[in-house]
Image 1 (spheres, rainbow, N blue to C red):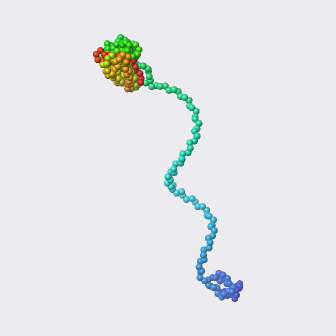
Image 2 (tube, rainbow, N blue to C red):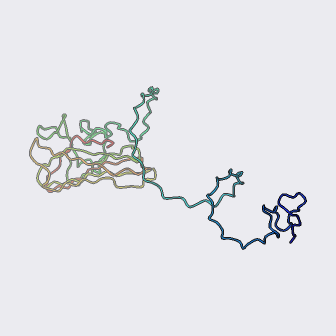
Length: 258
């Protein structure tokens, strides 16, 4: 500590005290006073204004993608828009040509009305025994036209017709009995070019089930199974069974593609 040596206050020769770091007040003491103990810290002053924001730092790396959230409910369907104009009609195509092999060919049976005869046998038909058939022209015994064929017990009347395989065939005929004990079996049988037979249809009429009155014919009709694809011929056959002198009148036989 330094000591002032001047005699009074304000003497320019008086030096500052190096330790006190202040000029000696007036009146100037003899010695520079020693600093007292440090007082308590005063209360914190009010917070000053916020300084200017510093520059923005670099963007950090993107974090991993989170799980997809659940799908929200479907919204209501919007109203239907107006119907557009109808486009122009395209050109009409050519009419196709039917190539179906089973188109109707009309009547297939020859002389089914039993109007023509060669001897005692209807023309176009064959008999197992010509003596078992005869031409009938009496009123009440002919279904249509001028004649029918009469077949006795054991008679087999047959006609073979060229056909197309794969088709169905319909057989129909009219019959009456000359006596009650008369029965009839009508069949259709398919044949290929090797003469191999395939049954197609059987119509059986028992004795006493065929009408016997004059002018009273029964009508019979049925459709065959489909002919085999390789069928080339269809055989129509009538076989008669009769007791004693009884017999069968047959007329208006028809065969068509069904």
